Image 1 (cartoon, rainbow, N blue to C red):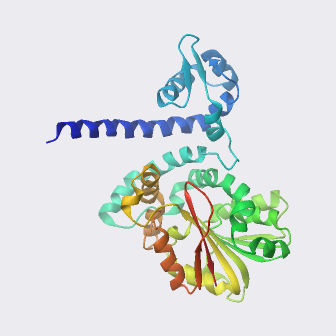
Image 2 (cartoon, rainbow, N blue to C red):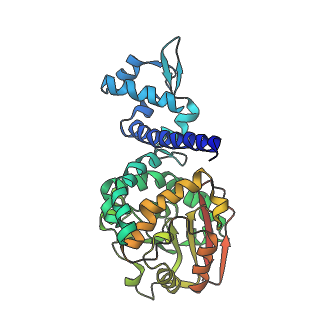
Image 3 (tube, helix red, strand yellow):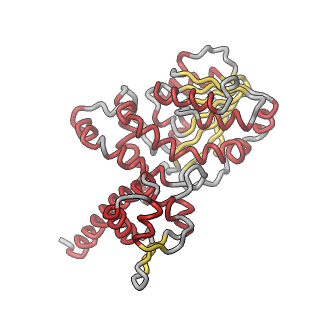
Length: 351
C-alpha cells in the first residue's frame, strides 16, 4: 500500500466532510439572516453581531467561529472582530440578484434528508418522487434560479437567439415547460407585454405558488399556469417559443415530451433549453462543479425521474445526449448559444 497516497486521501475525506459542514453552516447564515446582518458593516465584535442579528448568543458565537474556520468570515484576533468581506457578501447576502449563491446551501439539507431513501432505491429500484422534497425543496430551487431567471432570461439569454427578441416584442405565444413556481413565465410576461405565456408543471404545489405570484404582480391576464404536462395540450396551440429551463434531464418521458413540444410549435417556432454545464465525457467533469452536479443527480434529478418510471437521465445528461433527443424529436437544427455561464449550457432548437 502507498502510505502517502492513503494519507492524502484521508486529507481529502476530512476536506469533503468540512465542505459538507460548511454548506450546513452557510445555510444557517442565509436562513437566519446572519450574512445579511453582517453585510457592509465591516469588522464586528461578537456582541455587535448578536445585537444586529437579535439571535441567541451561544449559537451566534459558534457559527462565527465555524465560518472563520471555513474562510467565509475574516477574524482579527487582536480586536476580536469578525467581518463578512464585501466580495463574499456579494454572493451570499444578495438574494434576488443574478449572482446570489445562497440557494445552493438551502438545497443541501433538502437533498441529504432523502439519502436513506436513495440508498434503499439502490437495492430495490425506483426513486424519490418530486413531491417528497416538500415545500423546502420548492423554495430551495426557487432561491437557486430566481435571480438568473428574473435578470438574465429576457435581457441576455433569449436575445442570443437570432430575431427572437423582436418576435417576442411584437407579440408571441410562449410555452414554459417545467415552469415551477413561474419565475420564468412571469419574467417573460413583464419583459414582453405584447406576448402571452402558458406555464405548465406537473407539481400542483408549484403551480399554486405560480398562480399566486401572477395575481400579485397583476399578470394573470397574460400568463396562465396549469398543473399538467405537454401530453394534455392541444396540438393546434401554435406556440412561437417554448422554453425548458433546467428540466429536460428530469423528464419522466424525455423523448416523448420533446416530440410533443415540437408538435406544439409553429413551423418557425423555437425551443430554448437550459441544461447544467457538463461535458459528455466523465474525464472532463472531474472538478468541483461536476462533483456537485453528480450529487444533485443522485439525490434529486435522476432519482425523481426513476421514481416515476422514467429513464433517469440525470443532471449530467451532457450536450450530445440532449442534441440526440432534440434531433430525434424532429427539430431541424440545434444551436449551442454563445452565452457565458459557469453552470449552464444554452441551446436553441428550431422546428
